[in-house]
Image (cartoon, rainbow, N blue to C red; front, side, top):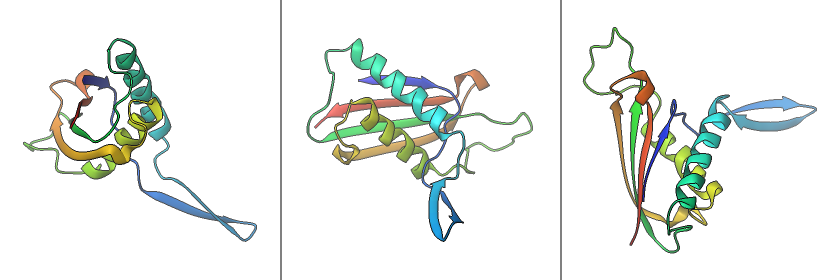
Length: 133
């Protein structure tokens, strides 16, 4: 199953802590993560509706290709700057679980991930290919 999600990919994983009333509270550092996650979840659910595969059972292979926006002044060939690729994968993996395509993101036993520059800002997002093993 091949799914394309458009938007500005956001990482998951960095947490900040605050202390209130003697208790420590952890929260996601990225304020934009919930919007990106919801965009992914909706795209994954829509793909499942239009496919004969509603949920993957057992081990899966996942390929994620992230298309990052680039500044006009950019001279780099590769997007070798923040956000970290592993944290981008974490946000998409959790979205696969929330959407119901995977019962648990621990089903992912093969993961290939790429970060590329998008041709245009409108092309930013992620392409996810999932297959059963």
